[in-house]
Image 1 (cartoon, rainbow, N blue to C red):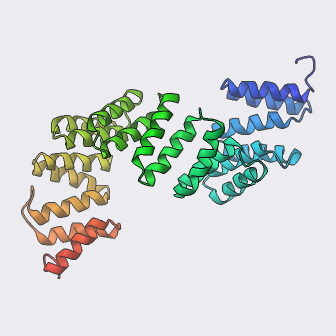
Image 2: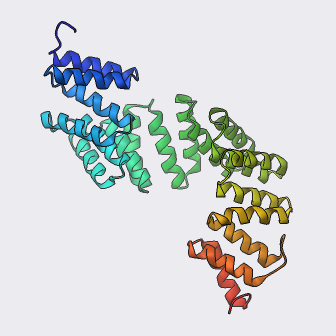
Image 3: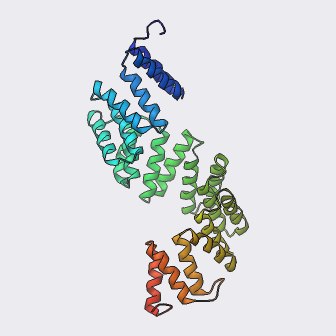
Length: 331
């Protein structure tokens, strides 16, 4: 290759090989050399675009895609990578246009279907995402990303059985995917498979011991089994890593409430409420209304319910309405 630096096909093959090896900086150097030699290769620029997307350099990735599209306007791969980059830049409308244009050229392309499915899931169109994810899996059943994204869509649609099925497939293909272990734990917990759910949270934490979501999931699982000391250990781990995490302070308060340690619970809810966490404000309203850990005070209860209601927290709105109905702590 050194003897023929102008060979565009050879430069493209080299860039694509470096991308497969994960040598991202070498990909960029390779394409720069190709440009300097005058060997404009769509394959090389596509490798550059994919690399820049992986490096979160999305505007540059789009420019590289546009270079490919100026040579081949029907490049499904370039339209797909550009759509993905636009999605990651939160330009969902433009992303949708690119990905649907790619599928108009090749309706069964697995990558275009995968990324359009991901876009639809991220924008809440879960039912519309499923046919694209199924098309991707029909071509590439080893795509853990498609299995995971399909699981997310199914979970949002309330189909826990199929969500669990997809997550298990995903983890067979990528057993180190921490988010999949966490999601599987949540799905199993909701299905009352508590022991297996706990095991999934523990596997998630083996991959990332500092993951707040898995720590909270494990704490809630222990709390449901009335293993309050173990639940507190997990939430304290979360607070050790992130002392200002309002969700963790609120969860600690919830565990303490279930353990009937109401005064300690109120102190935790207050910490979470200081950060503007509406769930904690709601919990404080209940404590003041029912006299749990504090003297019963309807006026204070109404004030806390009102704060949470202003954040559109529905349970607080309902409870504040009931206080008005009963004339408790309100004008």
